[in-house]
Image (tube, rainbow, N blue to C red; front, top):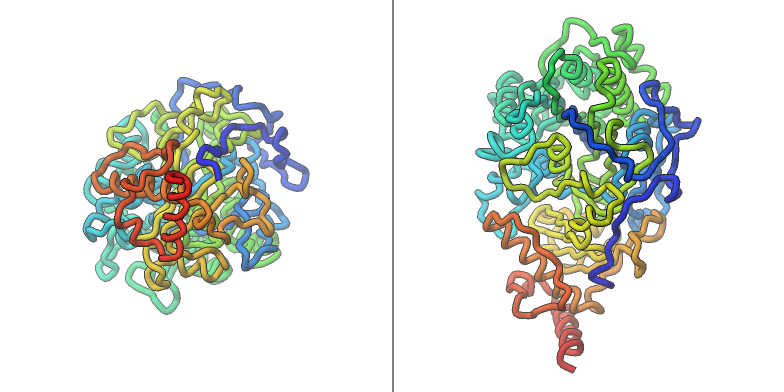
Length: 559
């Protein structure tokens, strides 16, 4: 294990053997793929871009998109694209930039969305300060936009205050609501307070299951991609000289409500805002205003129910691309598509929970077929979008912009070499630096740690402290998905110095979160200093690991 085993650099898709557009996955008519080129072709235009961040809910990480290795419990599992394909999402990927090692900060929908909209780790949420625990308990119910997080310190406010029209469409999940007194209009006003000029197609929380209906989710509506897509197109079509920032969040394919039932048992008129007078007309979806016929085409293209949500989302992407082209805005619009978290296992700090697909389509600047091979996070999403727009955030953030790093200039990637990313859920924490990843499970109790629970289910290491080599002894992140999961074996007993160094690093991060210090903790290259290891870190070591670590340190530094 080398502390300086970094995975960096950018490559052309054709050079790395990545897939290219084929006849089996046709690009939509809005796109004309160009010959893949290197990132050195990046040309920054002076005109401020429109920005769309699209974040579907619980979307699978398909094998074609380069997911992390399968879990040991299901080593041969496949996540194949639907046989029909996802041509519009594939167009974003193949005609833009694919982040090959993208991460969320926290593997749940609400906590991940907090980081996307603020460019901060969820443990920094002002709502999380109420518990007073260190490390704080990062969970959806206590990770909301309150106080300055809502009215000042987020992307929507930054874009709005710098001349952008701002819109939130779809699932929110970031405000406290009283379900007993909920009204749609009051929920819209709550979200608008967080920097959005326009809030439409709003799902303030997850849809309720059939046996848990409430005043918000009363069973009169379900998933409705036509409704939210129609509202998004209205923002695109607005006749304005101002660019727009849109946060577009489908509820699909989250299974709180069945996708199949949503398509068959509800109509396009059934919405959280009430019943529409007519079906929305959406070019590329309900062209003739016939919702029932359109929805049948989704079933016709799906081989199984698991395909339905992805096809529905893909149609929405195609409709947005078509509208952008019709408005002559496609060239200068950043369309960033990312999952909110991984799903195998969802709700755990292992790679399958925190790695996500992320594609950026921006024809004016980003050439087709580009890939970036360094780890990036959803905290970087906002930093990069603001950077492209020429906006310096007025508040402190954890994220870094990759705008310059995606170029082929070595000097522009200096901030990425040696950078560490952190992951948070419950009171568990993990950190990845280069090839090495360190996981601290605060309490081995399935009631308080979903990482511990999912790890046991998936045959992954669930020791209190864990050290993994994600490169499997090489200098390249392991991408072979079958039989190569690097988080099944805990290497901590044989790597005492590395483990102690990571313990110091994680403790540094926790301390800086506690005092609202946004400087980045770095992994020391001079070896561990036992005096810097906090009691809270040593407390979590089991006796065997502790003795082994101390013996290793004694051998390394005193013999």
